[in-house]
Structures are given as C-alpha cells and as structure tokens.
Image (cartoon, rainbow, N blue to C red; front, side, top):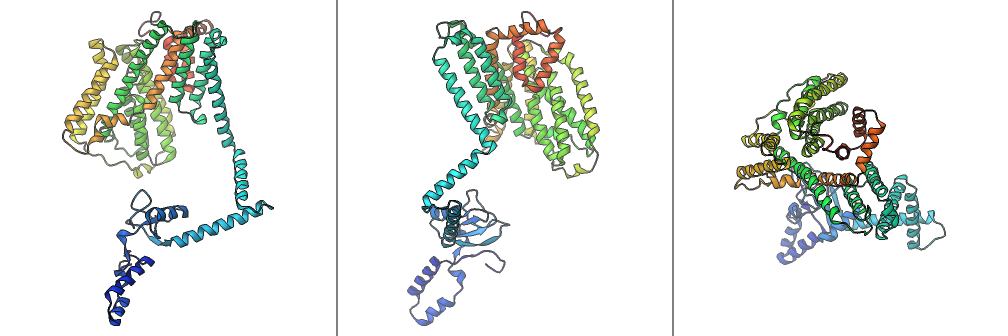
Length: 545
C-alpha cells in the first residue's frame, strides 16, 4: 500500500523469481547485489492494473475456477468488483481490500471440507468404508428428504399429471375414437374448462397463461374441425372458412392492442409522462389521493387502463414511501383505471372488443357511460380516502422535482395523445375498422420519431423498433388463444345454448348482466366478454342495445 492506503500491488513467488533473475543478470558485484536486496519491494510487485480480484462473498469453488481460467495463483479479496463477470481489475471506488488468497489456501480448505464430509458420512452410514458408496448413500438420503417436501410433491404431481393428460389427449385424437365423434361438444367443453383452470391458477401450476391459451385453442379447433358433425376426421372447407373468419376478427383486436401499446411505449421512452407527474406537487396525502385518482381516470380513457395502471403504480413506488399507504393508493388506482376505461371505446380491451365487433358505437358509449363512471370513481374514492391518515411521510418521496419536459418529449407526448384520440374519429369518418386507424397512428409516430432522431447515434431506444421489443407479446398471444377458443364455442353453437339456458332460468337480462359482472371479478373479463358477444348475436341485439 502507498502512503494513502491505496493498493500498489502484491509480491508473489513469481515476482520473487523475476526479481532474482533480474538481480542475477544486472548485478556483477556483491555491492550491486546488495543494492538490489535493499531496493523497495514496490518496484517488483505485480501492479494493481494487472491484479485479478474476487468478491469476499464468493465461494472457494469460484476462486479455483477463476485461477484455472486465468492462469494465476493469487487473487485479491475485495468487497466489490469493478466488472459484472466476477473477474476484475481491482479495487473499485469505495471497495476495501480484505486480503490475498492463493491456490494453496483454497485447496487446503477444500481438502479439509472433504475430509470432514467423509468423516461425518462414515458416522451417518456405519459399516460402509468405500468413499464412493458413502457419497451414493448420501445422495439417496437427500433425494428421499426432497421427496417429502410438500413443494417438491406438488411439482411432481403437476409434472406427472401434465404428462399423463398430454399423452392421453394425443392418443385419443390419433385413435380417431368414436367417443370423440359422439361427444365432441363435451370434449370441447372439457378442454376449455381444464385450460381455463390452468389459466386461473397460473401461479399454482406455473404454466404461462399464453402457452395454455394457445394449446387450448389448438385442441378445441382440432376437436371442432375433425370430430364435430364430421365422420371423415378431416377439416371441411366450411370449417376452414370459419377459421379464417375467426382469425380475421381476432387479428383486428391483436393488431389494435399492439399498435396502441407501442404508441404509449414510445411516449414513455421520451419521458412524456412528465406532463402528468409535473402536476403532482401536493404534500397532503388525501389531496394526492384525489389527484392521482382523477389523473388515472382520465388517462385510462385515452391510453387504456392497463397501461395507465402500470405507469401509476410505478409512480407510486417513488411517490408514496410507506408500504401500507402504497397498497391503499394502488387499490385506488385499479378502481380509477377500471372506471375510466369504461366510457371510451379505447379505454379498456373489453370495450375495444365490443367496439370493433360493432356491439357499441363511440357517441352513445361516451355520453351514456361517462356520468355513471364518474359516480363510480367519486363514490369509491370518497369511501377509500377515509382510510388515509395524514402525516409527513410524503416528504420522503423520491420523485424528482417538477422539471420542464424537453421540446421533443412534448411533441411526442401530444402526438401520441392525438393519435389515440383520432382513432374513433378516423373510424367514423372513413368507415374503416379501428385497427386501421390505430396502425395509421403508429405509422405517424414511427415517422415522427425517425425524423426527430434523424442522423443521431445512440438514440435507438427512443424509436419504435425498441418500443416494439418491450411490448408484452405473451399478453397479446394470450388474447389470441382465448379469443380463438371462444370462437370455437360460438361456431359450434355452445354459446347460443348457454344464452338460451340463462334466458330460460334467470328472470331478466339485468340479472344476467349482474351475474356476468360478478363472475368477471373472479374470472378474467376478456373471455367472459368474448363469450357474451357470441351468446347475443348482433342480428338479435343491435349496436348499443
């Protein structure tokens, strides 16, 4: 170390050999040899810029691997490393040197651990002398212990159950079983129910819901095409045409969501939401509760409620330091986002689905649902705000002070908002489907950002291709799988049968709507709305009925 306690290097056996070699070549007399011996050791150490380090929390095995890979025999032990791969020139700023370890130190420790392990195994399994046999017995013992772990048992049951169900299903389809021909509707219902159970309990089964939805879609379409009222076992031209029609309908929704999400992502990349966060200056928790509630409500009507919920929850992490308060604010954001997403065709994926399918139109949706949505918002916030306790915790907020948004960010923000708001207008004026309008808006934003960053290097993250790479593709594929599956239930007549059953057994459509609404609190509302669209045909129930 130097006078300032900065590490200069380390003196190893290799350095001593180099020192001896230099002395032998350079010292021709005893006096010159003595001068070499009394010279400062700092002249012969391995300097800091050539040292390799290892974190003090790393294992002996990693130390051995590092030495073998790099061909060194010594590592400096430090608190922090300056690189992410675990091998580094050290030390980093603020890192303390803990010492130096050699290959001999590490191997001695490993050998000691191995001796202790063998001794303990010999006591655990008396009568066995062969070390290999002892290790094998220990592995069997650990495997048996793991088998008794409830979590491991659950995983094994899921694996075995999935394998058995998969093999049985494939075998049933390949066998062209007469049972499938005779009970194809029951088979489709069973596939849908099993798939939907896996989706609902996604965290329990640990199957991605998009994967389940896609497999469910395939299973139902194969059953419908090859076995429903079809003795040949091969899809007919009529079914193939239905498949094309269903995919066309579903693709409209998926492309709409893809374009809308990309526009919002580009706005966020340009820090466009500073326009919103700059409005939040209050230090009163109750006032903040109302401000965020109304901001979420109106933004959800424009940007779609799922995106706004994600943005607002991210904002709350910086804005509200107390965990209990943040949970209450988060609940409020969910309520406000759902209320705000109801009264515009682009505010929620379900209203978008209904709008694209011509079940509702823009004007009546806004005029007839705005006031009920506001009442829902105000009533919920008035109830929840009573649970907010005023204190000084907001002073610990990590949200940056309000700052002026760069002109480019303002241009992109307002262009994005205009693109989204223009979608209903475009559709009304041209008569073209909404997804064309949304894709047009994405094209406009794409061109705008390319012009803004024309000739600039290192700005790729601000352009549309980067935004597309960040999108929730699995979520869009989930919608695809679910809506295609619902299409099978619709085209096979099962949804019509369900509608007739509900109409015959429930006294009014208001009660039916209430039951569906309650069910949506427990089950994902996307498939429920899709199913309802299939139950009640536009020929019988016109737009906005």
